[in-house]
Length: 208
Image (cartoon, rainbow, N blue to C red; front, side, top):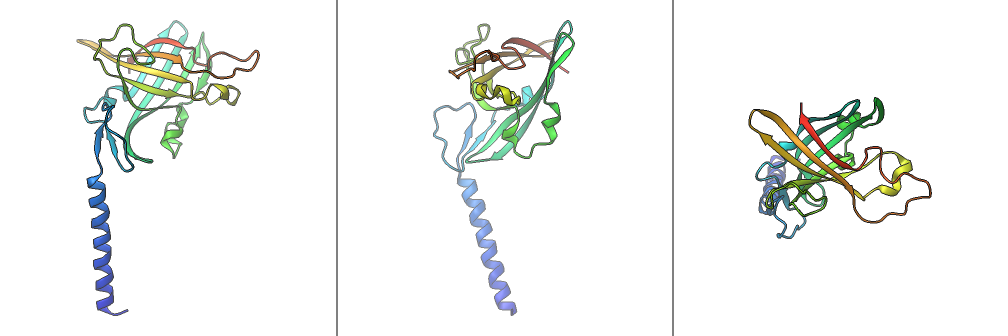
């Protein structure tokens, strides 16, 4: 291969790279709180106002010998059909001193971020499910898809959601209010549990 051919191949490669970058740059950047703009292929659903940052970290709920630990991580520009900033997480629940479920080891072991048991990039308001009786009308929360990895609870997959509310008080550690509920119908086998290992309800966690 002569120098002229090599030079021509390099020029073509540079043009292809530049074209790819230009196409990406032209893809729309959409605020995750924007519910009006259509999500087209290649769009970037971006956490423009850093709403997800408030929830990143380790959180702890304690009630006697019952504890709930959640760890959330923010990931940016995760690619699927679109690009998206997402919150992923795992949890540990101990009831009356007995560990019911612990998925925290998944945090650094899953290659597909959407395989985590807690995932979100969806902003909700006061009256949107799961509701928030003590939220302001314009207060923005985060809706999280919840999974229990127990295969015997597969009939609950896709029906469980958490609404995350960030609470910041002067001189007090940040708090996170969770409203956890089931939406939609699912065929529950006779005698099977009606809820996952983590009971539905409201939890208030302290940032660690």
